[in-house]
Length: 404
Image 1 (cartoon, helix red, strand yellow):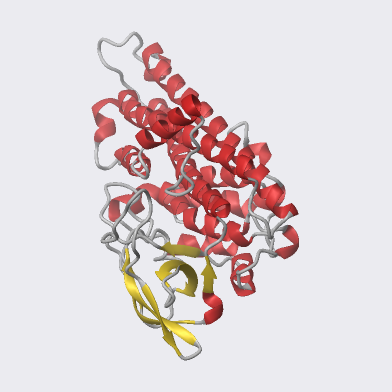
Image 2 (cartoon, helix red, strand yellow):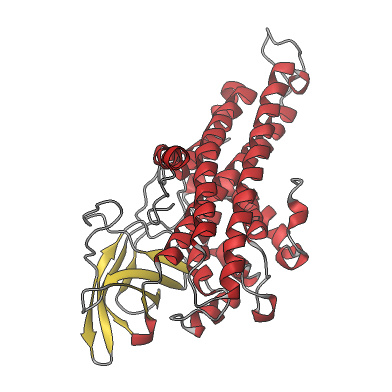
């Protein structure tokens, strides 16, 4: 247990949640090997209302701060980074209506989250023309009586395979880009399990087809102020980085277990007992140090997000203060640049602890590197470092979209 574990209040870490993390961790390797989807585990996470961490206690949530929420995501990702990744879109979508007073959001969505409901995302289009993060949507709404019909195809719909609701981006009849939230079980919605990535195999990141899907007028959300969009973008990036921090903690856990279980060492090693070998001890010490720094940096981003959230809570009808929102974006970008490097280094070093026997399929330790590499490929660190460098040198603000 990390020294940061005390930061999570009792309301956000019931005994059931800790026991559930252990259950999730126990089956993680097998699910990855068999590409087995964790529907049963998502049902249990719904039951303990993991997705309601950010909602106030009075409304059925845990009232957790962003630091506390990110710590819970890290712990879940340590158990299984794919399961934690499923909550990425849920957390940044639900933050838009966490106080219950924001305009444009239907109370039924908030009630669903309080009861354990999960929200996915279906916004990306592979054939969309992109220019600096903007482009032309091909998913369209057309009038249908007092409502609309939705047609289009979305890719990389992370979490939607498991979700009760999904947020979709489309073009309204007046030509405006809008968002809408619809039940995933509604007629005309097809969720395909066609994600074939080397890692994060069971995040439900597949294709979603919408064919004549009925959309009610009050399920459409006009785009918020740019500052709110930027804040949501930062949250999305931060959750992905939190999942990588969880992978790093899992690497440390497995490195220690692997070294303690070894009964023989290389014939030229300085000690016949692997766990007493100073070379191998040094490797574990480096992995532990990487995990410590990654956790500290990520939780500092949580503090920056919390400052924005508190400012929003005071004036829910107003956009987040631009300076606080930008500070959070900078912190998230800097942290991603460093965490991606640390987790990939440690996931590789894990094999030095165990030697060739650690590279067997039955051990499946390569899943940590595959998961970390896949997570790190979301919005590559090189672009983050470029933006941070321009900001440090010239004061150029980071983009407000594109997972910044």
